[in-house]
Image (tube, rainbow, N blue to C red):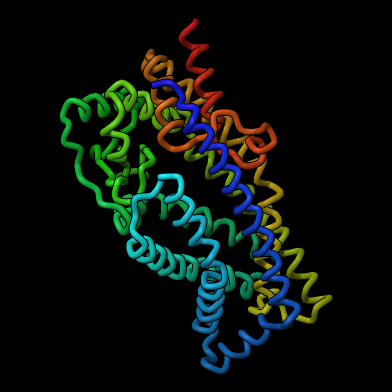
Length: 372
């Protein structure tokens, strides 16, 4: 399927608006945290939660939960526009407003539960080990991410999407054999009912260990040939062959350590300069958020560059393992048209924001392989 010029025009518009919304949210989030600090709302909230309870564990959770809900409500108009209005305008969403709102509530509840756990642990180690908390917190985040990756396919994704075993026996056998050649054990091949929410296509190798499974979006299965699906899955298996999950956890942990270390410097500065009781003072939470956010923004190009490198390797594995460059190129062209992926974004945009090589570069890789 050739690249549709009209879809590319829409892709450029959609990307430009999405990037502006991303920048706007970053700026407004930083301003919101600064306003909270200047007006002393962080101190006020701390006083309120300790009026409700003197239990440090419950107070910590209440502080996080109230801050989380307040942020969600404050930025709801932006979330509504970027998550509902814009995808509908460009034909990428099939959800009714009620269903979208239910998903927002589900996501909010999960955010409070999982975010609350992380918040409790971080403030526990802040109180218990103020000099080395950033190392302990980083170790916990590594463990937390591994557990979450293992549980996501069976506990989290089913909250938002329906799954069913893929009934196409021929394709199941073909994909299972492909996984076996990559020395990957999978617990079945499933279809994820993406069409209930989006027109975009996707496929993934989900889970770790005993929860690892092949998952195809129904929006992909219904519109792509078996050859094209095979090359898409081969890309995902390339990550397994190259040990990208383990290496990604290492890189993520290094960045997490760096982020928490910067936060430690900022929190200790706040005690000396702003009069907070200690680095574990709940009122200093906005400063923790600002420090981690700034570090994440500065290091984002590094993380994305690493990710693009590994994605290129996975593409090369897909081409070498299937020996079907035309299927690879066809799949990339369909993804560009269906998902509104910009073929050739500006170089600085790709460098700053893209975790994958642009679709145009991936197609060229396939063409180069075909010409060999």
